[in-house]
Length: 215
Image 1 (cartoon, rainbow, N blue to C red):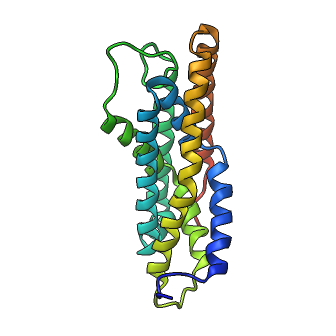
Image 2 (tube, rainbow, N blue to C red):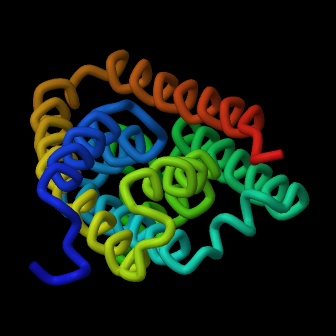
Image 3 (tube, rainbow, N blue to C red):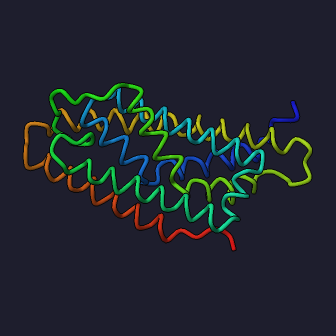
């Protein structure tokens, strides 16, 4: 077996952990649903692709030790927390204002590009310090520190996490599309969903501000 592939027991244990994380509600999941309900599954999948790209970036940072420096440095981590919280607040405002990019009811003339939806997904993932904390504190638990192939194994596990998450997020986008076609004609349901998404993003913003880096 190549050096970069962990033992089967490690692969299976990490797959289970990744599955649990993938089905746990978070700002990424809320964004997938809201973007799909507004602009369709193509844009839902675009935000998914952006978020998965963010996961790949976090994995590479952990593999090469950069994320540890970010989380360990109080100032850098504080800046990351503020940026993430402000980004979520902006998404919350977008969810409830007329013509906003996260409204369930389609806004004529304001269709974003695929690239814009992709960048939204990437941004919400990269500015979430809880994601950085997860990868810094959890991912390395599956690799021995004195393993000469530790970096390559961390990269392998990052790819495995994407593979485990992908069918789950695809199902979420498809379910959101089905829900949209079922509820779109009800204006009060659309408004309730808009405010619900705003509340979710604001709640996650508050949670991010309470996250603490390593002392």
